[in-house]
Length: 300
Image (cartoon, rainbow, N blue to C red; front, top):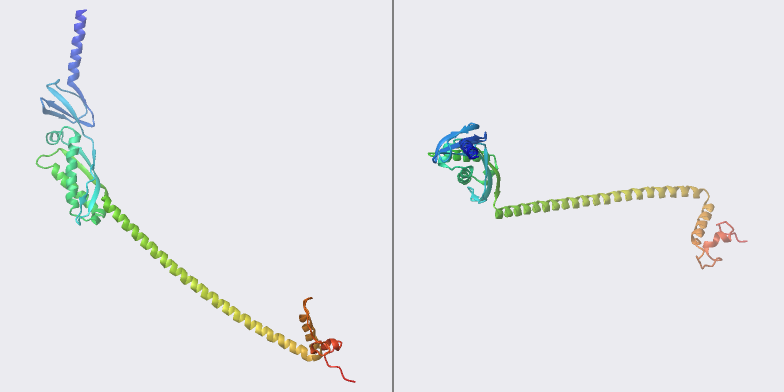
């Protein structure tokens, strides 16, 4: 039994020793082998690899993929005309030389991100100080990002290279600080209200002008219609008078009788009409006294 236990114990020790000498490098990572704290080897190819067991050799991993660094602060920057603006940006970068990166930056991606954030912000500050707000919002924005990328590359590729490659630098937002933004919005609102009031005033003036013109045309139309109506009425009255004259001229006695009947009809139109006259001496009742003849009766 002791021999069997010793065998299994020895087997476990061998397995542990072998497993400590083998490691796998993922295709998304660099494998860095350390020998007593010094970089012994950088493995760039994925697969199964062999090293000495600890503490003689250790292995760490560094991401080789394209990384994204977003701006993390909102401190304002001054433009050429001393306007305070806040920008949001991001950087696409990757670790290209693990040895230089570990020696000059750090042993993980966070160390590179922290230092790169400071370098990029300083580059943006320097370039924005040379430009106006209009230039930041115009087509010169691309030139700004190109200049920032150039300055960052000069920094990371200096006397002590970082072992990183900066692929792209982009601005996602340019805005005034909150106090200035509120002031700008207030001015925009006031300007829009002024334009709206101006348009309302212009519309009201045009409306009054149209209504005045319509009233004038209405008065002119009514006056012309009244004039034409009076003219037609006068012509009708004249024609009626002529016809009456022609008709009554043929038999004056009948005409006198007809007019008297019309006068009687108008005088006694209502049952409540009362007329106080002397029929015997009144010229108004001559037709009735003469039995239908309007001529005075001959004396015998």
